[in-house]
Image 1: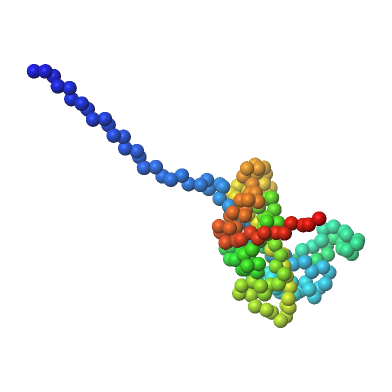
Image 2 (image 1 turned 135 degrees about the vertical axis):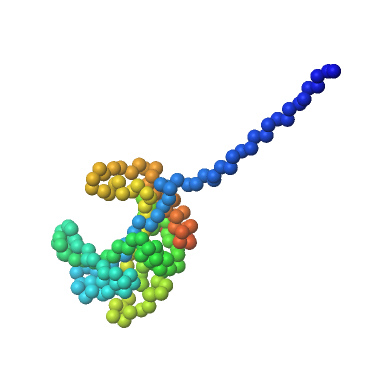
Length: 197
């Protein structure tokens, strides 16, 4: 009886289910804070109206901005209050961003973004914001809005103890900030006219 060669079936290797690769949590961009600022000069009447306006919009108490340098041509000396501002963080910051962006119909120019990923733009009239009605006691005023973005690990550059340096590849650049604002807040970038010589 001849030996019959039994052909063995090749083993089928089953690939283990692998979890999809997720983005690095350290690279996630978040909103650090929103700063609303109003410059009024040396007029105390405008200062009170500016404070009232920031309180009217945010329901929080603003602080005065004080001069640090002496500028004789503008009649400014150190310690002189020339404006007021308010800083919002967390849920308050995320809640105010759609409101301040509505003043410009969610349109921002590329010049509003700096090379570190911060966004700054002006609001000529507060009544252009959604949900903000005209206040007779305040009148018509504008303000400057700044949105500061951050990533995890940015604190090492600001802390007092064992202060560290953030590498360039971890910082937020202009393109990344624009992409973040487009996806998170539906911001559209408007074309800016180039200066004609």
